[in-house]
Length: 243
Image (cartoon, rainbow, N blue to C red; front, side, top):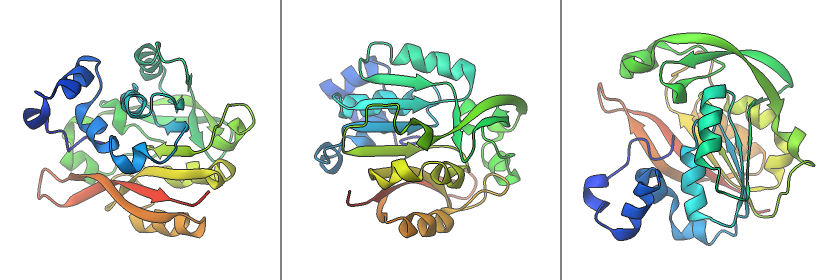
């Protein structure tokens, strides 16, 4: 999740705007990662927030791009309810209680004790070793849909940004959203350097997949380091394309 390991509250909390942001319940570290001239000047007017959890990204991107349409997708019902509450005052916002993948229907979902770590894929031992508090899991059946199903149902003003935070299922979301991604200018995707979930694609796999679809790697907004040895576990990678 963007900003998860990069918040610097002790350094910035006295700044009036950041204090106001924090008082709204917005993650300051996430806001700082996104509040950059390159994104502010990108012309983004539509945001797809895939893997929304309780609205951490949605709230931050709304503060950065207050006029953009935001569409959030979250499969866990309790997180979905908190997401709706968090964004209830945002006019150009709509939430969907569904997971995005490469098919329509229902599928078994692994719910982590720490909800942002939940996934369609079983959690790997490396993830459990580095973040033991996430290890307890239960299963639940969730609704599944393809991103492209929404292509003609939603207002999609150009330019478009898509954010993927789906814990190892990035390739499936990409497969089910090729038409939307073809119109996407900026893609922010959590990319793992090591296998944190069983069978997940790693950074190199996603780099190849996305460059084949016309995206260019633009760098990383943030990264998460192992609390065990300091190695990089995953990054929030930015890919861009000319639309």
